[in-house]
Length: 85
Image 1: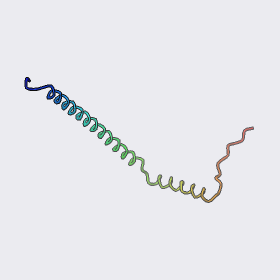
Image 2: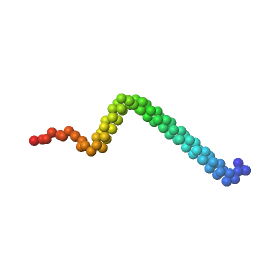
Image 3: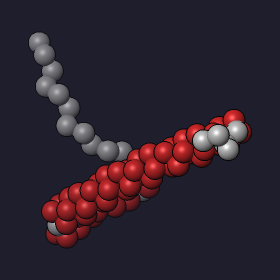
Image 4: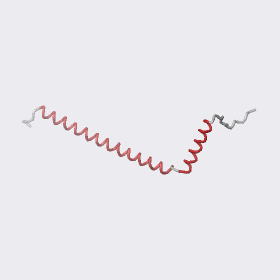
């Protein structure tokens, strides 16, 4: 230890700190990647669970019919609430 001067000691400390911080960053990044993988898996499960072609077809047909109705210039007929006396 007598050979080492102050610069070598400080260089070793700084290098160790950089390696430690790099390890912390890698661990943090791997945990975020794992969480993103879980979210992607959950998203695919939800899509496959709720993807019903018949219901989607009917919903899209209703939407397009409503848009065509609006484009035609006709007024929408909404049920009127009963009048209170």
